[in-house]
Length: 519
Image: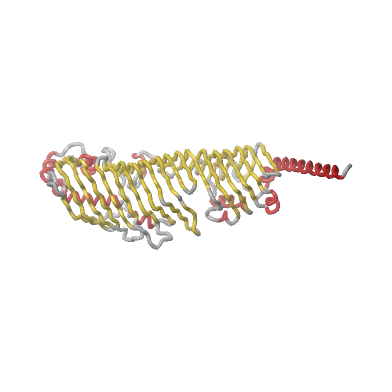
């Protein structure tokens, strides 16, 4: 046999040996990997799967119908920890040499197809240990992908507290090791993208939140069909609260956040964004007056921002084409008073917390809308978060309001209805946490009033007659003006404060005799 043929024969035998060795190793890994992992004390899960394809030469693995079950929680009635099913798990180009020599995982790509994960509540300390155990060495990956996943976070009653479907997720340039896992964000990465739909969140005793879809990519967030719904009817909610408290219903067609930057600076969370846009918001705020008053002091908005313990910086928040309603009900035997702001456009500038900042620009709120679906309303509101007196200025202007549109407010709360036209109302209100003062001016014509008995069902003829004698029918083509001062009720909101100012302005200009003599 020639020397060349011998070399070919030897190479052929070596190649066959390598192939057989590879096949043998693949078979061994496929059959033995679950028992190896399940016997590893530091690995906290039982692992099983229906089939596995292994290619040691390329470092590619494909696992079918994988199941992950915590070793310390197998009872279906008392589950704790994470339970997962993955239809197909693909691992691309695992560096086996580094895994063998250094016991570190270095892989180019991991793809989880149709994972279904249920996370049950567990002791907090045990949760942290479970997370740390698999990361004693290091894991690096070029890309992690999740395709068409489902995730459920269960509460102590094993009911969904968070549920998301059709999850797609991609994370690139990933590193996790014993250092990163101890940090606030347990991995380092470069880019990420996330999307899901049919998201549900149980927001506690009173509310549930739904999202039609959520997309996060390139440091931007886009959410559609947001709904925050009360769990109780108004009567149920009123019966269960010990003191007065608002009930909220909020919907939004879309919420967009541009170029959000977030993370931790040492141990301080920071969230920065140049713009947040909310489209077609409907917000209803309902308050029953049947429960007793809440005597606690209410913070003004500057104080609320000053109390935030993380670094918040939102340069601009915009509400477009929205509707805001406030309803207040003295008793369920009568309809609530209702204030409506439609075609609501608002721009809020400089929403900052003081964390990490020595000076702050003024927060400014500009609003244009229709008041009671009838009259154009413009409001400019300014305050500074760092001002510990919580001073603010609100400037407003309402035009061409038929006064009968105010009857939704005045009849339930004051047993008064009016007819006529409020041509123009202008006010400047300067306030702080203690008191407020400012200027009120009104132009009106053809004003008539009707006063009702205490139950609101029948007109009080004598008081109506006297009221129309005392109220001037119009402002004689000019403005009626007054300088107004009011004391703040500290157990009420800033909007109650503003209402006290406006109410006092009306008393001193349009309704002085009516308010002081007839009612």
